[in-house]
Length: 275
Image (cartoon, rainbow, N blue to C red; front, side, top):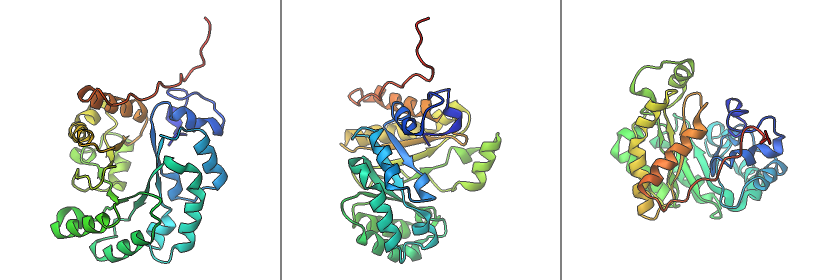
């Protein structure tokens, strides 16, 4: 996400060499979704550049490759998993959680496979699972069984809150595209561990996005008071203003809980001049 084209020159300096782009992003936000790893395992050298551009407290939530989660559905993936873990090793403590995003067809009947997969994973990492099958949200027994599987390995359940997007018909091309691709499931806001992760998708209209996240301001504030360390990712269908929106969310939480550390000061998008 740190190379998102609409941010270049608006929020992030442009042009920047590849080895500086993540550093600029990290001056805006202290966490990032590692979504590109879903499409291909990066080289170790590439991951080393990610580590070099971020401090040890920066958080990567790194998605497992689709060859593991979607194509092989967690079965017979030892070789791919080993290569992935080797590649991301340079992140060290920055690897906040490894993100197991499962396809919408992965339902309650597949929980045995998920449990076996999670038990085989090295305990040197933390794990977070995102499910999209409706039964995990509508059927109490399926929800309970999934929570038991995750609790057995201290893994988190990542909610992807799309309720604001689907509250009313789309009004832009980006929103119409999101309507066809994003999961339409109820909001879930129960944390299973001390490190909950939330993915929130709003609208292209800023005020509708802000209105839709009110629930999460209260939930995240309460988690912090309980001693948890939540990570929240703010999205809109076009993500054009996701960077300032993420900081606005953080500021709203700090308004309720001033002891929360502020985010870093963003690097200027334009070079400073004397005149």
